[in-house]
Each structure stands twice: as structure tokens, then as C-alpha cells.
Length: 225
Ligand code: IPE
Ligand code: IPE
Ligand code: MG
Image 1 (tube, rainbow, N blue to C red):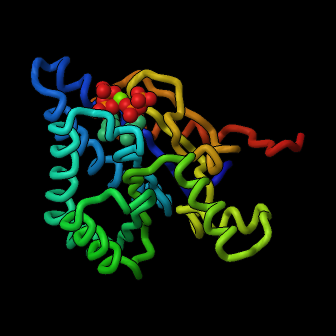
Image 2 (image 1 turned 90 degrees about the vertical axis):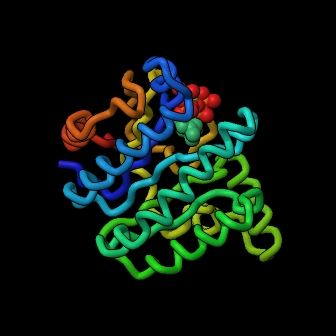
């Protein structure tokens, strides 16, 4: 049976969920947060050590300002309210992505949340915020050049935003589209991909466990036979 160290999720479909329920896209984002909490608990139950959540992409800046502002305020509120809980539950929070474009207030909250939880070992949540794989690779190669070190697989790995994080075993994308949208292109090279029809707020613990169960039985070859 395959062990699971790392699950990565593209939480897609919030906006459509809000509209489907005759409400706003933003309400869909709020509903999505409830799914986040459920999946978080289930990840701990399953003794999985790393959970990466795609929260905002480098391309999401194209959205209307009102939605962007709402998304960031939701995150701010969530962290302020929940960071102590996360800490008590031995959860470590790490932000992956380009912090340059994040406003000073949220930046401070993020830094503080990372600092408070940095020694926790039960589960590490990697929050992909202003994350784009192409931006990450560009940053990686710039770092390698600056450090005057050789371009090797090992050095690339060490200079990604995800250094010290094993590659995802499982990628889940909800929301009924089969694309990666610039997410972890390097790290997903050998991950098992699960594209789910359900919109993120409708995704359940049962769906999650079905995926986990199916993953455990897959024969992973990594090029071997
Ligand atoms: C994903 O849901 C969450 C973010 C991108 C922040 P969407 O907002 O993309 O929802 P849909 O795909 O438009 O329904
Ligand atoms: C991917 O969803 C980004 C996040 C879930 C944060 P999008 O909704 O932005 O992806 P596209 O634009 O439909 O490919
Ligand atoms: Mg979407």
C-alpha cells in the first residue's frame, strides 16, 4: 500500500458555487473555507504530514478588485481567528508563493503565523498564495545564478519555494476542469492526479477518503516496471 506524505489541492469552484446558490461569488469563497476546515481535520486523522492548498494564483490578480480584496480579507480574518487553534493542534503554517505583492498588513499576519507555528510537527500546511509555478521557477534560477552554484536537480529542489517539502503524492482539483493552472508544475511530475466534478464547497470528507483509498492501491512505477 502506498504511504501518503503530501496532498496538494487546487480548491476550484467557489465562485460558481456562490452563483449557483443565487448568491455572490464571494459567498462561495466563504463557503469554501468550511470545506478547508473539514479537510484539514481529515488530513490530520489520516496522519498525512503535508497539505498544500492553492489559495491565490499569480494570475488571479486579473479578477475584479472587489473579489481580490474580499479573498485577502477572508484569509486575514481566518488567520487572526484560527492561528491559536492551529498552533494548539500542532499545525505548522508555511506560505509558498511570491510575498512581494502582498499588502503590509497581511504580510505581517502571515509572518507572525509562520513564526508562531514554526516548531509544530503534526501537520504542515503550505498555503500557496500569489503562487505560480513559472514565477517560482524564475525565482529559483535567479537564486541559483546569484549564489553562483551549479544547475543540478538537487540545487533546483533546494531553491524552490517548496524546499524541504516532499513532492505531492496526490493532487486533487475540484471544480470540473482538467488543468493545472500554473500550479506546482515541477513538483507534480510523478503525482497521482484526481480531477473532481464537485465544486470546492461541495467537496466532502467522504470524497477525500475515497481518493485516499484509491491512491493507496495504485501501482506507482516512477519509470520502473
Ligand atoms: C477557486 O475558486 C478559488 C480561487 C481562485 C481563489 P474560483 O473563484 O476560481 O471559482 P470558480 O472556478 O470561478 O467557480
Ligand atoms: C486556480 O483556479 C487557482 C486557485 C484555485 C487558487 P482558477 O480558477 O484561477 O484557474 P483557471 O483560471 O480557471 O485556470
Ligand atoms: Mg476557478
